[in-house]
Length: 163
Image (tube, rainbow, N blue to C red):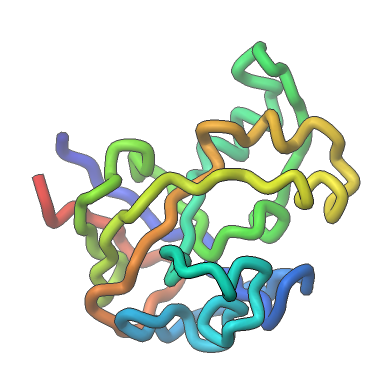
């Protein structure tokens, strides 16, 4: 599998339920998270549960499909802005579903894909979009650990390391 993707947006929130803030650049700390983000600070909804939330990603292609109501089942249709989905990084051209267990580069950082993200019903309430939970099933993004920290910026290339 050969691919080459791009980082479109970087978002953080200082605590659970706070609005996501878009960043022009972000500092990723190995083994910890994105400086200023709720999971780095320990103020996220799931911070008390040990899990992999150093950085989360979602594909812009998923947002495009949801805007069109695809797939037809469940047929949920809504326009989601990059800050609405609550993931840290929005990508294009990155096959997130195929990366679990693999390492990849984002700018000067190296991430390891740990598991696919499971959507939370709370997002429907937060955004006032009944049906969003089902619309995000099996395509809610990817949770990763940060193996090599550094600075990332929108426009950075995302490249595979493990093939």
